[in-house]
Image 1 (cartoon, rainbow, N blue to C red):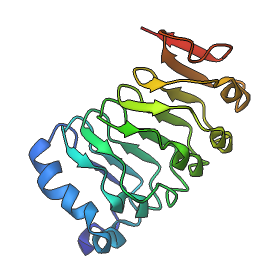
Image 2 (image 1 turned 180 degrees about the vertical axis):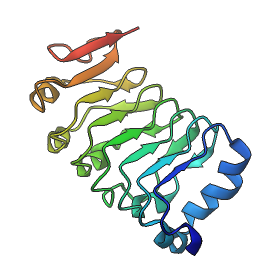
Image 3 (image 1 turned 120 degrees about the vertical axis):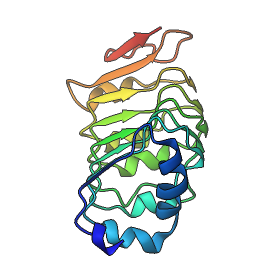
Length: 180
């Protein structure tokens, strides 16, 4: 692993066997992550990886882009993403994420794009998301969310929030776009 200490980008998209059997155990072991301190891009998308998001990801402190779309992650690890101070792009769309614990995303103050669409997330969007002042794109559609989210429009004049058309979630949200 020491040979990977200068690695800036790791893309293993559509490599189900490699991602599930090699990369996930690597990221699950916190001691291994110390060798990936320069990693800025991690793309494990489209691999159908199941289970919990590896806890070692939160220790990849230089990470700017994390793409985990189209896997089968059911929950985040017991650790939050608070160590990812430079993260600008996070795609957790099209997974099997459940629950209503969304407040841990507010620690991602550099985040510009957050995609949580097509999961089984329920509850309300926490007001603590006001801390994500750089957020310009937010995908929340195809979840079971409710409540007022108009406060998100105050984050940035150009913010785009994509929500499901059903129900009254997003009512009064001038920056929301309905996705069918």
